[in-house]
Length: 323
Image (cartoon, rainbow, N blue to C red; front, side, top):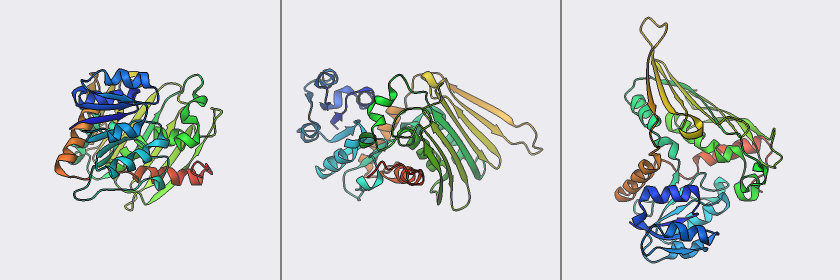
């Protein structure tokens, strides 16, 4: 299947590599030089500064949307209306009301890119949970964030008309997706988003408490005032605990620690796995997306669930990002 990449920056290039450069049929970016550079990785691949031309290019079957958030929903609608499949980067839109879930039995497939699920540590963690190694799940805690950079408050992410919000809609949707993946649907959503440090009209920190109908609880803190890039995920069951630290690179070596409760309790039996090798989450997510298309299957990551929680927190925090 042939692919169009819309947005040829870091993420678009990673997606192109994951699909295989030989699949590229069209590349679009407002910076035409960047589009030309990525298109040059494949034979007979067109480059354009107009994303609509890339979507409409003859032969394109899959569109990857890796643009700022303000374009994601429109690209998704246009692509689906053209009968083509779409992999849209998180968060999928600036707000849930911008998108519609198009999934039908025979229609084109739309998937939101949540690659953290496919990191090696989380694949192993999911395997152990599904095997019942933690017992019934009780609660979960996640901390995720970075420290920004000089002039961070002047980037497009700090402009609500482009981003739809700040740290919560940027990295926070990854955290929300992970907790939903393990605990399911949340019936109670509480917390707040606030700007503590950066001089910008969007949030730089968010604190969430989520509860399922059976009172399983998730605590989330996402931040762009961490100063040292941080990722920590702890999942507690009745008979064991998972902890994932690091995501590779500046977040530190990716590591999964499994602590199994002993019958006599006391210090648990501990097993750890480290994954210092290159991140293959992009390739693994791409393979599942292609399988979704082949099977006509609804993707595991839908278009609106995480955004609805984000909007709930922004309403509680009086951030009027979606006016």
